[in-house]
Image 1 (spheres, rainbow, N blue to C red):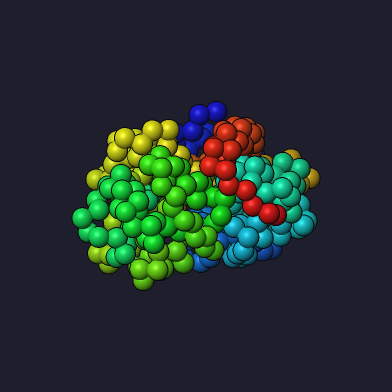
Image 2 (cartoon, rainbow, N blue to C red; image 1 turned 120 degrees about the vertical axis):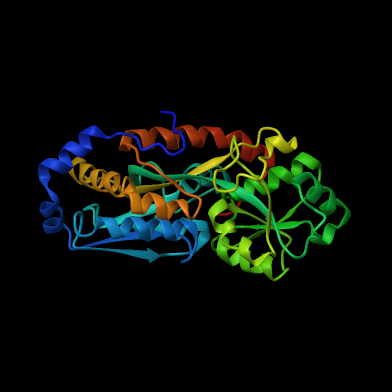
Length: 328
């Protein structure tokens, strides 16, 4: 399945089931639904979960709440959800990289991305930005210029990302490799803590979701030098892609997606999928996610499962090229 921006995939079967069961049946089945997120409040992942949660109540559950279970680059949330009952009350929202990249960099993970989770639906797709702050001279306006500056100023040759082994971590590492300069990496518990250090001149650059960066442009202290998509983002139309700046093979987007614990029944998966599809097609949710650089979309469980397999295979050679590994 090929996913495109601003596309909401039609899950006709799930929609029919939602219509047949009716909203009242959902409320009777689940008292409180918990959406577990592996990153700090205020970031794009947390924002997506909270926007969607508002539309899961009262149809899917009488109440829907978000739990921020931060730590280990998102692994804490995955581990928590896998241990919960597969009755639809506990839902994981996670960046797909935690399931597709981490298996290549950790010798041992506390979860099996396939065996411990049941795919339900994609939530949204987004690109990444590479931004610099006050520690970098204002004369640096492009990614190649930053890499040249980093070469000449090794103490400033660094960048932060939301987690070690995440997609933005690899983007920063690949940018450095493209110019033959080693950019030291600093891992944070989400992009927002990294942005605070960027604003405080504690780090030179941040690689993270576009929406996490654009929130800080009004300060006048942050500049986005490039974006990771195949084409310019509608959220930052004046910022060129890495490819436009002569950096090849650097088109990377990512998804947030929803999962249930393993062995969730087909009926439970279908109910949640239908509720998520309805929530993600809601104009308030679409517009709300858009303010954070996120393109709302949905998928069938099978399409999400196929995407995980495809991206897992895609990242294997990239991880090998970068040479990053981590102890689980």
